Length: 163
Figure (spheres, rainbow, N blue to C red):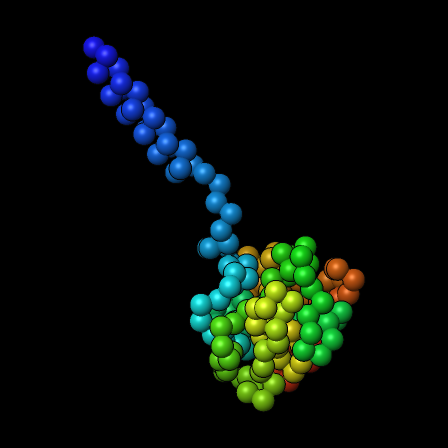
């Protein structure tokens, strides 16, 4: 009888552990749109262009997620860290970024962030995603004033798009 009770308790404990593990709240960014790219990259990032209606041809990543510039940044230096980088995840790369369709290779480069990660730049502007853009093609961050300055999409020449 004692052996049966121990086995039942062990089985119940395993079942409870399995249920709790399956229902746990993961903090991983995997599968959550562009924010997934804010983790340390394992491959080179790709910068591409895509036509987005009234904004015209703008910079996006290889999945079509919109890329932004931050007016508080200086040439090749990000001024978006901590809470800012959570709302506006930087486009990180491992190695040189890849040139996509419509992108000028001479304008594509990288800069080191304060933590040592390589962030992709275009025409000297560090590039970011906007966490509220949850699927490719969204431009919810366009023209927002957050963390001390405005955010804009970029055209293929590396200039902010204001319309």
